Image (cartoon, rainbow, N blue to C red; front, side, top):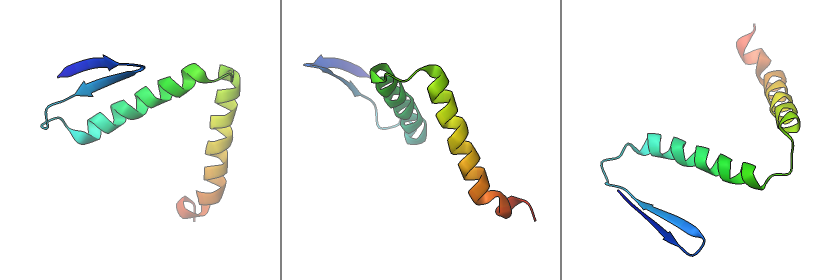
Length: 67
């Protein structure tokens, strides 16, 4: 593995044998951290948004699970 810093970016080079699914999950988490660092939203606002999104999903999909 090679890690380089160029300008305002960090470049990571990995061997091709790395599990791509795990790598994608890790990159998604890093993207979450990157976006969160720039966010002006409070943790309470983020929690409320997540709760609203889950509730909306459940309301749309409830009939698929409860018969």
